[in-house]
Image (cartoon, rainbow, N blue to C red; front, side):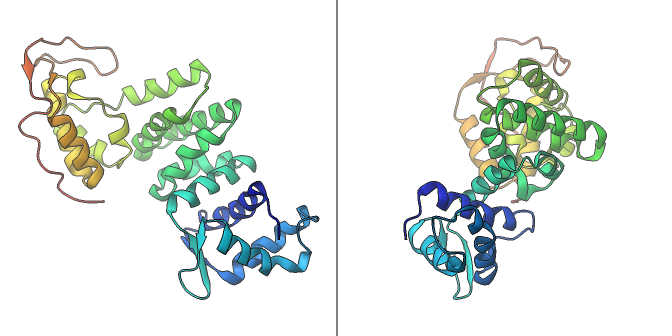
Length: 270
């Protein structure tokens, strides 16, 4: 059997795109064969329509992306492959609403970030604007939607400057935290905060202390790594004068260790 790389990817995308919306990390082999069979009519010169099981075995043995954890199930060798292919399938299917509304679900976080990279420029702008709009409409999830949009900008190779400014502007209203309450509320947005939280050189002392608390509350290996990496890097911490988030700040030039001494090991894992 001769399947091109693109044909293999197309078939595996369909499997990934079934797993993600259904909150699954594996499927029965019978289901995988059915998904392949439904796709085969678009590939009439590749294999007969009754060859779905043969195609499934080929993908299992030759693609390098799927595996057989038990005799009657199939999954991807790493969750990243599932999320990457699922994001690609969602963008190709123009399911931007589905991607935007699931930004509040931790299981969709990487899918949504990767979708920004897969999308064309106009789709990318629409997807980011949808996230901003939903965050505006849902106060209880605003931090999550707006910060995930900001974290996704690193995958936006090209983007309308107005959309980029809109996303950054929303995130600037949320970070960095300046009080204990703000730190605790920000931590509820989850690990996405770690990707948009600036270093202490850009903060007042109060903001730096509150940011350490946020990182500690998020917890987990990524938070610990962030805290340790920043503590080993010298920087200048702003003075005690307050600043308005998103409108710049007045900083002193006195040297200080990066994070305050109050920094503690992240208190809980995700």
